[in-house]
Structures are given as structure tokens and as C-alpha cells.
Image (tube, rainbow, N blue to C red; front, side, top):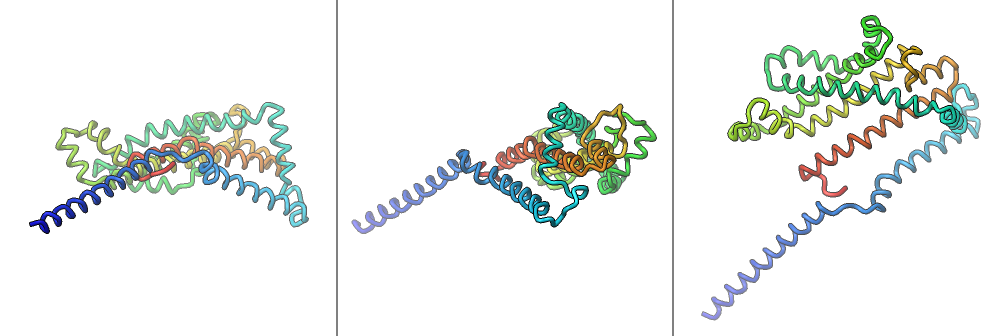
Length: 301
């Protein structure tokens, strides 16, 4: 009898220990999700590596000049010469004007593409006839170089901002729509059946079930759509430059070519890269982290 009671007690003790271990693991998991990384860790893991990469590029760049590997300034200007172009543009008050002219056009065009591409992608994904009719066309338009739309846009609309926005739309809308279609295709059918069971059909089902479930693929389409928007705008500004349109980054690049100023060309290239990276870091990366964190796929950060 005593032996039986002892075994029962031992079994209960083991069960309590296992339960305590599971609870500790859950507590640790919850703590890992809620805790935030320190600034030092963020600096070391995310800020310092790009700084080191930029420093290495500048050192190699200057070495090519200093050791006469490339001794023709008309082909490769020194970092100091490019810095002089930045300083001159800043002192003349034109640097921010170059950036704002292009960024304002790019963001407004992207928002218009978003307003058109989102419902278009939803219709293509949910209506079989529409998908069969224009799905291949969207894929073909996505692979078409954006620069191909500049000549017809100039002929149709003239040298004005409407032409710029038309080129952006033709470049970005297919990417946004295809991204949403891809995201919807990956939504588990169980989600859709559960939504219909709860009465989420039509627009309500699309808003509360389809779009949230397709968000990762949709976000990928948005990032690609912005990339196409930015590249389309640069192509339009380079080819269709006009005093009435102002001087954006693409026009600055073309002006540098016309003036045979490689320093100005490099200035425009650096600014174009800077804007592209800044938009990704300030808009798309936070959105991506939020989506991943909401799905339990991002523990830290």
C-alpha cells in the first residue's frame, strides 16, 4: 500500500515538473516576442555594417584615383570632386529641389498605381474569366521595360507631369496587381470557407479575410511596384527633359551627360540610390516587420 502511494506521489511530482517546464518555456517564448533589442545591438547589427560597406567603397574608389589605376577624371571623378558637386548644389539651394521634384512625382504616381492596381489584382484573382483574359497581359506588361512607354506617352500627352504619371502607372500597376494575385493564390482555402461560414462574403470577405491573409505577397508586390515606379520616373525624366518640368534626379543625370561632367553624373546616381534606399528603410521595411511580427514570424526587432 505504501509503495503504491509512493509511486503515485512520484508520478505527480514528475507531472508537476513537466508542467512547470512547459510553463517556463512558454514564458520564455512570450518574453522573447515582447522584448526589444537594445540600441547597441541595433547599431552593431543594422547600422554599422552599411557604414563599413560605404567606407570600403570610398576607400577603394579613392585608391583607384590615388594609385593612378584610373587617371582620367572624365571617366572616374574623385570622391572629393563629387562632394564638391553636392556642396555647390546645397549652397545654391538646389539639392533638396532635385530630390523633392522626383520624390513628389514618384510617391504621387505610386499612390495612384496603388489605387488602381489593388482592385484590379483583386478582380483578376477572384474572377476566372478576367484572370484568363488579362492575367497574361499583366505579366507581359510587368516584363516590359518602363522606358518603352516614354515615347508614346510624350506623343499622347506631351511634355508635362501627366506624361510622367502615365509612365509610372504603366510600370507600377502590373507589379502591384500581380503581387496581390500571388498573395491571394497562397491564401489557405480553409480561411475562405471559414469566412463564408461567418458571413464574410463579397466585399466584406475581401476586406476582412482575403486581403489580410494575402498581405505578405501583396507587400512584396508593393515593394516591386515602388521599384518600377521609381525606375519608370527616372527613365521619363532622362528622356523627356524640359524646363517646364523642373529638374529632377533623372534630368540632373541627363544634364551631367550633356555637360560631360562625370562628377554631376555621379551626384545624380548617388541621390537616386539614396532615395531608393531611404524609401525602403522608412516605409517598406517597417511595414514588413510589422506584418511578420503580427504573424509570429519575427521574434526580435
